Length: 408
Image (cartoon, rainbow, N blue to C red; front, side, top):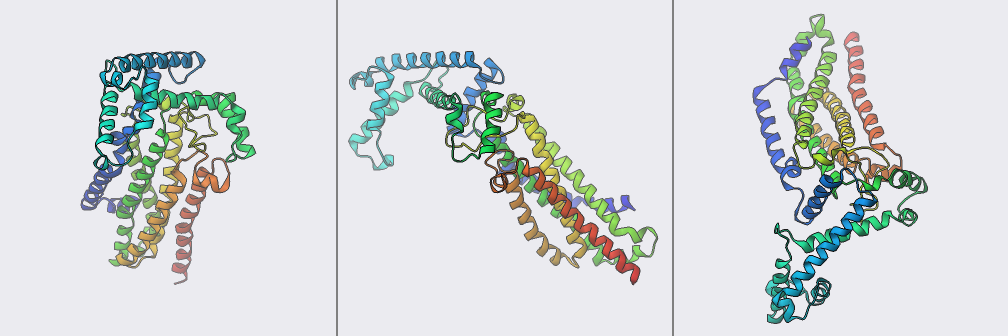
């Protein structure tokens, strides 16, 4: 009976629609981590992180930082030579890069290019011409590299002062103690992880769960509603095995959901390991790339990115199976397709909102659930509770229906 019910879910037309939805969703959201990130403003940070990863390994120790400082001085010497020999810089009597930066800040025109007057346009062109000359032998922007290094040095300086760093009103006393151990005693801040990588990955997992919610809504409940419309359940009740049809359909629905989650997650998570970000997967979650503007984008946990990805997958399984339980309850209580649709739409949106709260910045201080509760690992606890409740509901329904059937 189990195999018979499972075969009902295999409908080529619905599978084709599911495939098209997955392809569309991939092109709209899931391929961002492959083709859209890093965006322009973050590219040089990722290039710098890649260079340091290949030169120094997973983290920066004090000797590595000294070498980076030497790189910075060399870059300053390079741009000083370029500026002093540039004809426009000579005309403006700029003798080094520092003087160019001051002149740049004083003369950078405000407003849109089309709104500039003749004098402002001339200064804009002078700035642009000098900046275009500030490139190395690989045609990479040197002033961009300098800006990245200055930001990194500024960030490193905050981690070199633990007491000052932890003296932030956003942290509770317990958080200060745990961050002190993770960041400073265990030196977790030294990890080389480019900025916002886990933020982008968390958004990727959110999109992945949205796809699963849509696919499960399409593939699973409609089959059981169709059986009720055709009176198949009443026919099955006449046989000994048919009297357990609701339990069989529950088991089939949960099994199919588990298989679907495994396939989709396995496919798209494996694709993450084909990206240029793979070298960072053995590095820790915290990093000196964390900016002062994001003091909550820190984690208590000494996990590698690999381990963090594994836990994100667990969250997807828990929430996905919870949604499957609700779908099975809806399918058992819907008399027709319209009733099914009117129930699935609000429930699916509710689960998407739940997914956003659980997965966004998961296992970081910035996570919404953690900010509401201040309970470490609350993402896991909430997901387990959700799964237990949502799977219990169709089980309770099956038990009650069995009692009614016996009475009737």
